[in-house]
Length: 224
Image (tube, rainbow, N blue to C red; front, side, top):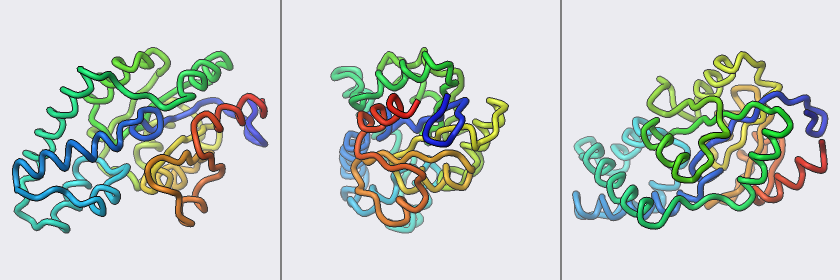
């Protein structure tokens, strides 16, 4: 399949904020859990810097903001409990256009994979609840790599398991940590805006930028 000047064999998607509209929900439950446990809501500044990070790197960042003794694991476990309760009662919110683009790429025989900072337990559950799990031949999750985003390990691992050169892989992200990881891995980087407006660093590391998944879908079908 052709996209612009690129010959593509795979598309590797981030999950939260890219395919699933879950980042504001994640912020909300982390604020609630931190207020319950330490009496202080996590700040928006801290949460924005966490975008794209795995649990370990988010914990290290929390220690910088709130001190080495912060019971981060307790807060995160409580936040995940609250989040799952909401997801089970309200469903998983998906990004407009994601169903169309997954179906289209699959019809073009493009291998589809996920590279997410979420744990495998959460990723598998959410993708299944969103009814998009069947599209993907591979998941690489945040608890399966040593170096989380912005390090390129997660995308490198996905390409290795797919047995593909990164230059033939779309890497679709929404966060600065995520697009940096994809850029360093050498993929064809796609930045799709979510809750954080792209800064110059993000735009410089993106081969292509779109305001929404629907815009990306329109570009893909016109380019092929």
